[in-house]
Length: 291
Image 1 (cartoon, one colour):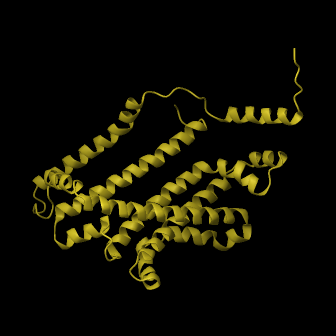
Image 2 (cartoon, rainbow, N blue to C red):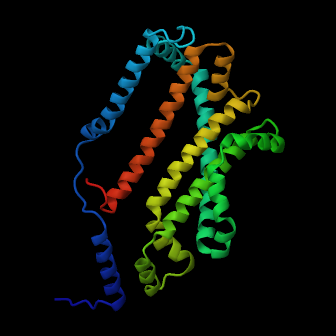
Image 3 (tube, rainbow, N blue to C red):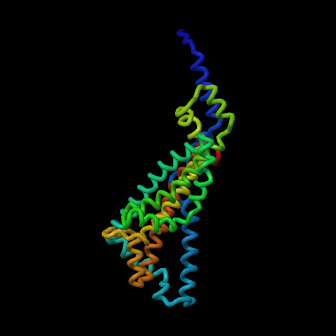
């Protein structure tokens, strides 16, 4: 029989791990993938059906001529034709590349600014309200300045996307750090956490729910800013979704305009589903959501 001596440090680690386990939700089996997808999808499908029925009712009421407001059948037929063209997918790829690049840069800048503002009280007093003010600014207000600074270029669009999204990311992180329980900070101090280690292992994980909300809001701002930018700043040779929508408007092709509106809406919904999935997984992990 072998007797192993347990060190005080190992015992303390085991105790902390046990306390962490009490905070987390129980690990239970998930229902099958099919029912989970259906449970999430049917409310959205019902909402789409209601919108299509209302849309068709407005067309039947002849509120506007059909060449101005075409019916769902015409639009969906044109959308099917558009989806089969390579040019359409190249435009979607360009738009998504711009959106993801601008959003990632905004996340990097917003995270650094948010961490600095939450860490240093004088900095918060100086620019805390400014960040909120920037968050409330309509993105279209930045385009004249962006065009003066960067001319008609990709940089002008990126500038507006980043400045539209970064304040939301920063505010999400600041709010999350502000609401970290004081007890957790004292426990971290007792365990010897300082500096970067304190942020990495305690403060940032504890502020993650609010940070994800800030990321979600930041994406919404960046996506709206990008769509406005693609309509206003038309870079030669860059046939993005916004440019194609503008071309359809110039040709008075209402059906094609609505097709691109539907595409933008679908992309926004898919990204929202991804954020909701991450948020629900985090809340379930912390025992805040039923399995």
